[in-house]
Length: 226
Image (cartoon, rainbow, N blue to C red; front, side, top):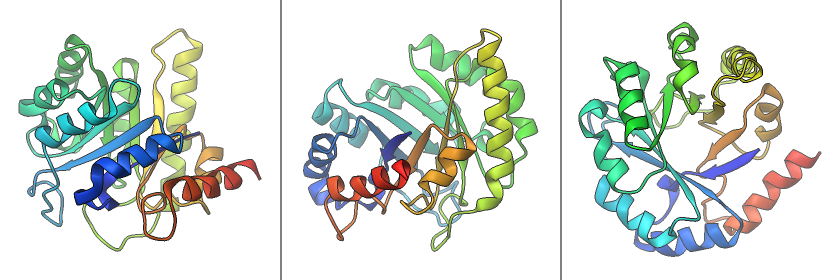
């Protein structure tokens, strides 16, 4: 299981220090949530390519960076995030008109291509795209809607995707990682691991004022070892 911090709960005045702290704790993958103030339901604006470039420059090339695009125009501006240094772009299937074309463009730019879908979206929309994807992200909350808890009802979708990806790999197809995001804490990390999740995005469970990232990460390690 890869634990992947989302920086949204960080103090942005101390973002560089927080990133350094995460790397010192052993984190090797950072998750960047980009919201354009339009697509998500709470109309939040987070940050854009300039901040992404600053994060890449701070971290260097040893940390893997993905970019979760919660925007209306991913088909028009994906290249700005690739130019800013991300390794993987994850657009929402609900917001992209021609996903196969976008995957091809990302791979043509030497960037990994991911896909993320909301809890209400059927995996029947996702499965045909699996052969060309590097990662699928299952949302276990509704993006941008505050005060939500982890939605265990996504289990069936996760397990179905796990089976489809395993079949694809067994047949010699492209390896595709399975990620989850939304309400992941130390008390449910083992649960999603058992469903077949390989990468878990964690926000306030890692970056908070209750403990250091290393201390919080240790709680996840304990939960996964039990």
